Image (tube, rainbow, N blue to C red; front, side):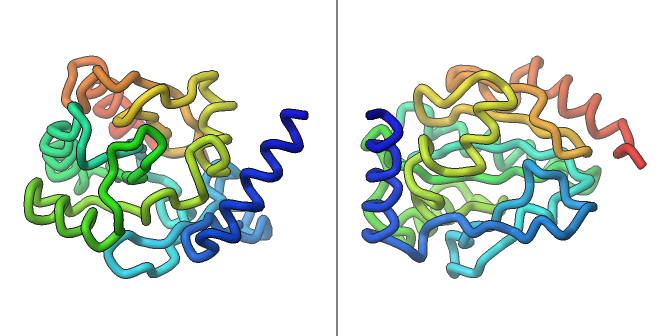
Length: 193
């Protein structure tokens, strides 16, 4: 019964907004780690972007919302990105309305993030891949870490080899000692050959 409900949710979501859903990246690229074999439309212009472009990078993934008590974490996310991007950190955000706290349109979200927080890191379209529960990338992250977002601004860290190695609850800020120490350690490492 649960499986039927999940299939219906996925099917109905696809009918509602097919352009926003994740696109599978061909598995033929052995250099792309399985976790990164997904593509999503960029928030700003809708251009499809493969996550494979981030292989060899350290990735901080976060589900965002513009009207959440944790929205101020955009400042810390942008500061982390600015501080570490030249060393190989990528921050990617997935605006989500799973908890009813996101703006209505992708245009509004992009404008809000740009003008309020000066966000320059990559953001994908709202509910890219459907709700986080059916977004294939988030499903893979949940399987890899054993944790799924319970609220906005849940964070995952992916190492240079494309492995999800840590998950942090919303209250743990991106610039916390815990996350910063892990990011610095991972940035100092080289991807496996």
